[in-house]
Image (tube, rainbow, N blue to C red; front, side, top):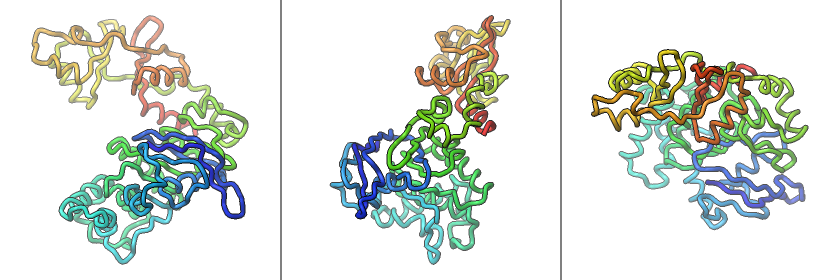
Length: 369
């Protein structure tokens, strides 16, 4: 967790870069700092690893005041990815990635194995790329190496300073997708500086919009789209995005044919469906397709040895649902309030209409941009 407590940064000419901000970034959260040039977003990020020192206020990492931590030691424990990539041209890819683990005294066998794992994670075959030099890679491949270098020493926090902005549009979108996938897997605390609202909406768990050194709004992408704090936010986002987002209903974003199963089916049948469709939750209906509940992978595993049980016997029936025609924002509120990653959509008569998931929400919103 990162906490900014009344943090101000004033330069020698007395110009104010950051003015008394208060912000909490949760562990495992990807937060995007965004705003016009000179708003203080990069300064805010650089204060986390003390590349910039605050004039006043406190910054805490996991409850510890970073002003009391040796800055070199602090930086070795925080990953850092920059726009210019910053790979050492005279060093092979494996040596670039191993730099911080070596400085931290990590066992060579351990970090060499980690290098191969990380290269695999970003789609670079270790046997093919480990011994290459940066000049032998494309810009997108170099930036992938920059990202995994920041992860090599297993930091809990990674700072990313407009890392994809110099890439061509196709490479940039691929790396955004890669970051989303990696974050699902590794769950790091990421502070990502961007000037691109499309990018922020796509990758962020939360967007922090800044203006003249102050935080104007810090919220989820959906809430910023639906409930902009003021005219500055509305202008920065763009009226077209706001209008299109406000008009979206769950009907526009739901998966129309989610994996479902009749309630009288046995547990073995349910397990087979999960394996075949690669899902961890089944929506249970009756013969008229009336929604009755859900069966999760955990429930199946708990009761699987009892051959007498049906899915009806083990299903969870007190499941929140939303009706067709519900606004996306209202559905998101229900999901957030109940800690859900998905929510069934039903017709007025109770028949299953579809399923809204976090992924389907993001896909639909991005199509509107």
